[in-house]
Length: 169
Ligand SMILES: [Zn+2]
Image (cartoon, rainbow, N blue to C red; front, side, top):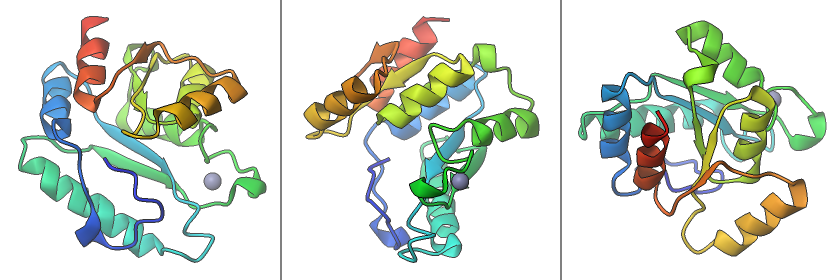
């Protein structure tokens, strides 16, 4: 998904090419698909919970056209300074997904576009794949270094990341 910061309008949602296909492939391999996001725009008053939920619903509508869908969405609405446990790299939302969907963390993987995702994976003991947003590779790598976060896999597209995760078995 293209990360439009504090995206408020579902009509502006963009999904990268190959994402639907890759999610369908992961599902065919027995994976459940969970989306965990930080949405501090809610506490900042830039977007509402309804906006965020509408976008998730729209994302799923569009993914269904590619034979895929997300099983569950979890979002943290808090500001970083609140130091909640649900904001990534906190692990609470992943733990909640594990309980809700009866997931096996040792057979899971996290595909993310920032150090927060990679650090969450480290805390959970889940392998991680980094897919930096095109054009932001340098700043994403700088963030990783700053936080000492090391992804297991680096890929240029979401699809390539999923293929690498599946190949690891
Ligand atoms: Zn939170």
